[in-house]
Image 1 (cartoon, helix red, strand yellow):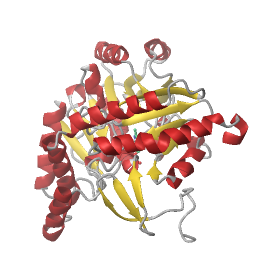
Image 2: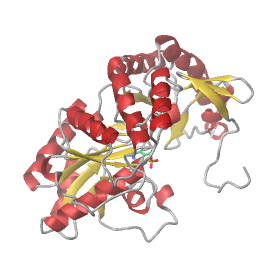
Image 3: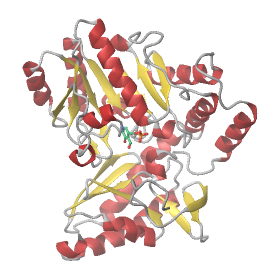
Length: 396
Ligand code: PLP
């Protein structure tokens, strides 16, 4: 460990193999994975079909170059456009890189439409990544601290507040885009109101703005629909994808349609690795398996079961502020910082995460079954009860 740059406060466990929702540590102990690599391993670990497809691909072709046509890339773009109703895809390697591409697209769009200082409205508590531009758009002061000067071009407003967007636009005529997560993940599992999203769609149409959704965490079936925005019955102009799309093989995507279509031309954007045969094969196989194993339905049903399970197990427990989320993106908000619960859950051989200091975040694999869903509740609920029963200063 001593030669690793000191950027993570890692937990003292390493896994050597996995199967479905279970991971096996070096010492042979089995852990139930309710985090799925932070919304990456939707198919669980070592899905046999994915493993076979990737092995076949590795044995045939891993990388060529975007200098040439890449058949897997074209096929995956077709599939994503069929699912979204959007028109064109640029493939990158991560959520941050996809988001950088989307931000460059806003600026290029502005330049092409007489707005060379295009501003993007972003949300409080948003999380868009760790590169300089995505960090500038991210709402976390803690993450931004120490990295000034950050790129400009962002106006931050409260989430779920249409009037705040109208006020921001009245104060700055350079607004060109509104960018948000339909369901804020790092921001504490906050869900945007469907009415707000529909009103945003109308506002963007009236003003000629781009409506952009960061679907990096909530996309790819996690909420029980392919994409989180579908819950509001709207279609954005630009979405970004990553995490669950490749089931662990790094991939990101900028997907554009509507007035955003055709913004980039040759030479405007690029990447060496993005959209390579291996990553796109992972994406294709992931989407196929999600469809054929009905993982949309499973995510919705298991998510409901877990929320109901915690609702019953924690009913009336003082200190539990809210249980919320959509599909398999679940948050349990406590009245106090609860980072310690991550270690306690690890002791119970359950993998969870805490975000915004007080929100337990659960992102189990989409393949989770009834027994495993109930087991998450059975392992975690007693810990939460005991935790909030402690005096607040000791719990913290
Ligand atoms: N956008 C959202 C909504 C995310 O949750 C994340 C990561 O947590 C990112 C972007 C950044 O993605 P990556 O870590 O792949 O760069």
